[in-house]
Every structure is written in C-alpha cells, then in structure tokens.
Image 1 (cartoon, helix red, strand yellow):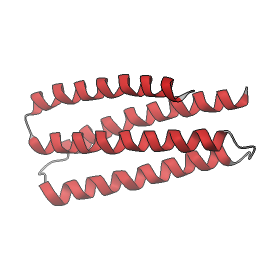
Image 2 (cartoon, helix red, strand yellow; image 1 turned 120 degrees about the vertical axis):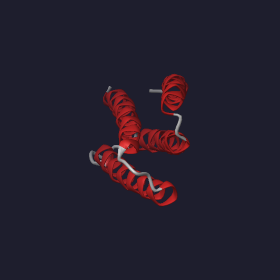
Image 3 (cartoon, helix red, strand yellow; image 1 turned 30 degrees about the horizontal axis):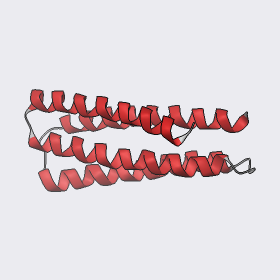
Image 4 (cartoon, one colour; image 1 turned 90 degrees about the horizontal axis):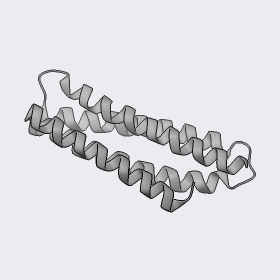
Length: 128
C-alpha cells in the first residue's frame, strides 16, 4: 500500500469518524463526551500515521520478526494510550456513569479495525 492510497483511505475513514462524532455529539449534548471523542480521534489518527510509517519500513526489511514487532508495539502502545486517555478524562471531568467508556470503545474498535486492515494490506504487498 502506497502513501497516496493510504492517505486517501485514511482521509475517507477520518471524515466518516468525524461525521459520526458530530451526530453523536448532537445527540448527547455533553461537552465531556465531545472532548473525549475529539482527543481520541486526534490521538488515534496520529497513531495510525506513525504505525503506517514504521510498518512500511519494517515490512521492507528481510527480518521475519519485524512484522510481529510492529503488531506487538502497536498493541501495547495503543493499550497504554487508551488507559492514559481514560485516566486523564476521569481526572478532568469526573463523570458520574460509565457511558463515556462506550464512546471511547467505539472509537478504539474502529481505529483498530482500520489499523488491522492497512497492516494486512502492507504485509500482502511485502510478500509479493
């Protein structure tokens, strides 16, 4: 997968996620949920760009374990980022319920699916 194709698909995916955030924000009318959604979108977008950059480098090497390292690093760093974002959100806003976790989980799952998609495309391109 080339950079232009990745950026095109990533741009389309980001527009869809922002549109869902706008619709969701209007339905809930909570600024704390909007803050969480916005911060999560920015962090995961930057995260996807960085992982794509390093995955392209990693998949172009001859090491058999380079792809595994990228997947493990991606998983662990996204997990730590998620915990950090949720803890920061809890500390700043002190929400009463756990509804914010569902909004965050929605973003997390969709970005993880997108990440798996482009990593699979990269690995297929590196094998051929």
